[in-house]
Image (cartoon, rainbow, N blue to C red; front, side, top):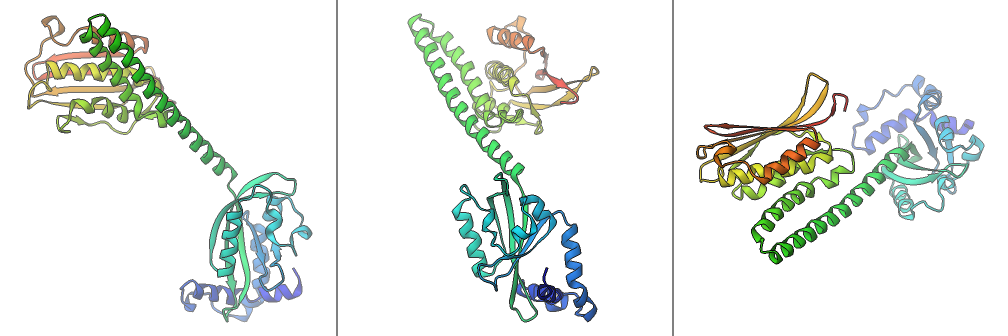
Length: 369
């Protein structure tokens, strides 16, 4: 830093006060103006800038092409350039073929209007590698309001930008998969319907299609999240049961926002479909006053395993009987039992006089997951 530049940095306290006034703060809020502070400010500035891990530079708008007049060690380490390759040059040497011109124009507009701005753009190191730079720039004034420098801090946000791009890609892929799965369920449903009509088994085809539709609803709201490894199971539960409560007052959802393995969606969807179908025919949803409450949560067992637990409770319906009496059994629950057996889960049903109470338990992993 030259002697002349040190003298100008000696007015740092006054610049701070002017900058506060420019930002709407009162001059009284600034540090006290003392000769001792003014004499030391350049030294204090240099020491602070040398020790900070934030890449920082200052440019001089009063010189041709607004060159950099100061760059700290963090700036040199981030960019790979030596001090003599930085000082005296405009910041555009950090730009390259893939730098967005719109971002450059945004920076130029902020400089021309002397305003603070934060711009994220692709920059280049000396060795040609790229990094995403979150650039924060703003003006520095002297006590008379004259523009002295522009301050720029650089933050390498490459990891953040990459993660954001991967997330956007995953969501796009999930939407595409969701679209294809909807088409697949529609095609399967059409095949079942045509086959049922040709064999004179429309009622059987209808029941199969109801299960296919339940599966489709279970997947519809979870595929966007499935790309990230887990889903909010409550979305699938609400989607499957929505058609059975058109007035939105007969089914009460009590579960929390637990997330779980997307591979269990099929089991959850078909199990709840069979329970709701049974309730519509024989249970709490078969009349005008009954109600169903559905609760779900994670529970650990004594072996250290985590389970998704879904509790189904019917109240206000007609008296119910065990399957042997003609209510609650059938092919649907045979399918559910088979799926649960593969998933090492269980379905316990209690035909309480007040209504069916069911508990579904599906293993999802260990306590560490």
